[in-house]
Length: 92
Image (spheres, rainbow, N blue to C red):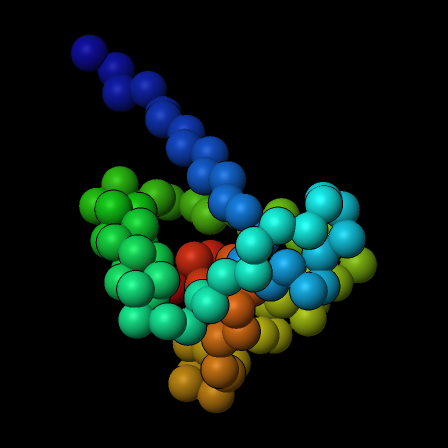
């Protein structure tokens, strides 16, 4: 039997409400609270068990190099994650 590729698409709410203008204002999250960090950790654990070979983050193409630089700095231990979902889930 041939293994077929599987695809997972994970959508999240915007974690930084103050910088988002594409949706109506909803409740502000304290993404750095112990509870939210535990919830994010649980999501990341599940994603790691899924063992993705590729991860794609929604981000404007014109800022691609900025995001790549931030990720490289994060891997080197020189970048503090913001509340943004790209950082909190995508970088972990």
